[in-house]
Amino acid sequence: MRAASRKGASWRKEEAGVFSPDGGIVDVPKMDEGESPALLLPLADDFHVHLRQDAMMKAVTPAVIHGGSDRVVVMPNTIPPIRTCAEAADYRAKLQAIDPRVDYRMTLYLGQEVSADDLRANADESGVRGVKSYPRGVTTNSEAGIESYTTYYPLFSEMEKMGLTLHIHGEVPGVSVLTAEASFLPQLEELHRAFPSLKIVLEHVSTAAAVLLVRRLGPTVGATVTAHHLDLTIDEVVGCSHNFCKPVAKMREDREAIRQVVMDEGHPRFFLGSDSAPHPRHKKEIGMKAAAGCFTSPFLLAYLADTFVWGSSRYTDDDTTVTKRLPDFVGRFGAEFFGVPVKRYEEGKPAVELRKRAFTVPSVWGESILGSEGAVVPFRSGDVLRYESRLVGL
Image (cartoon, rainbow, N blue to C red; front, side, top):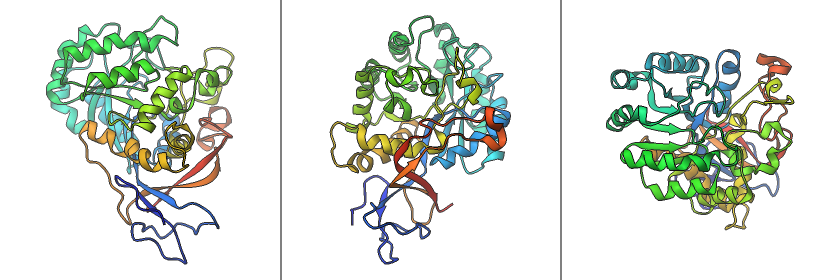
């Protein structure tokens, strides 16, 4: 039997109906002959997710815990955007009414309406943990985004004092999608120089240059990494609108740099933020101006385990990267960066079971609520993953 893996995960194997001492959820079915043991993880942290509004919100919010996460940072680019703590509290209440098992950590949409006084008085009670910056016009619902950071320096100074986080969509508008992130990086460096104690998260890194800069800038600058940027290159985006996101997946060398810092090195300032971004299929499957976003929430841990199996250049044993790197990437590094409790696997508590078993990604999600044309096509729809995930103890 495998030894227990590090940092809060647990392996177990059912033998004659007896569970290993570090296992404990008794409703796991017996393995088929030759099947690998299950990896048990505490429910993951997803520090970047889009949960939308109205019917779409009702359809996709349950996907968070279905995919293995129960603590998430919620993006504020709704229509209209979330600009005050009162608006964030109202949005959070709607999400909690759909699924109260998830810890929704709210953000405000950076703009002139965001007030340091409001944050100081109401952030804690409303669940607001940071402010999100969108450059104007670069992605979904970013028409109200910003054009200059210096305007907001007084706000950033107050955020630095309050311990709030600045989340950044790091692209420059008006340039090629392949160079938009790299063109933004000098602004990130300037922001960090101006506010060295302000925690800054460069969201959904997609380039080798961004990886290098985040590593160099030090302990108050982190980066979220998505399942799809660990998987895709621009070659898989061309011709497939369901793989189109912002920032777009880049060249192979960019993907390899992201994989190396996450899978080979396990760098503590690179952690999971799925950027799961659902759109109705009729807004993705069109000839021009397909909506940007990959919907990964409902099968998030399975996507990651599948990619961690074959995406690392250092490890050759199928399970090694999953056991050594995945638990920290989805459950420790982000929590430590944000200063929130690190979850540990506990016998009898809700957990995610990952098992090496073929799993076919369904063709749609939310059809019963959204209808056929309004339903969401999950990332890698129809593909067979090497890992299957399921919840236990709930």
